[in-house]
Length: 221
Image (cartoon, rainbow, N blue to C red):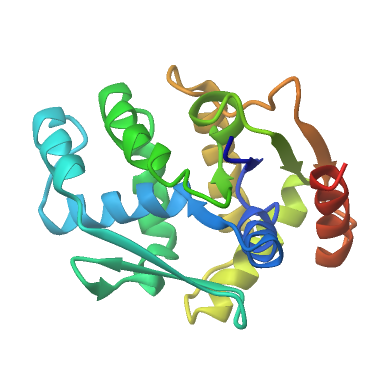
């Protein structure tokens, strides 16, 4: 059986960072499901595919030319769309907002879900997202759900934007995080919830190393 570690939670809790480190330490494959939705949103935007055009969305989802490259030394995941690196574009607030809206569309989620499941390859998989443990990999060997205070998460998100040369202010970022939380938790398909069998970790006052230690302890039990 191929082991799977799922790391779910809302934005700003450190999912991507922890997943990247865990994948490197365990020497497992890495899936950033959020990057898949963001890449789809970016591709749809470039092709002027609207939120209400499900037929065109499904055509795009089936032909999406997407590739991930993890750089453990820089703790960075590079994303290539149509053989062009789009990592920076995926980190913009505009792309994140559009991805969150597309994620509410049931048929599109089903199509992208099949693509996500193909990442489960030997020797193992670390899957980062919002419904990895509750929907995509229900039988995962290890499940983690990260959470944090919304103000802390907004500050982290703002720092991430600034680190990537993107302007932003805390009040606006906080409002956007709250709206995304509400949308993710209330959507009909695959709402953001912690699986009953997931280890819940509040990262508000923890360092990256402290979170990694807790997750690693789970995997090594």
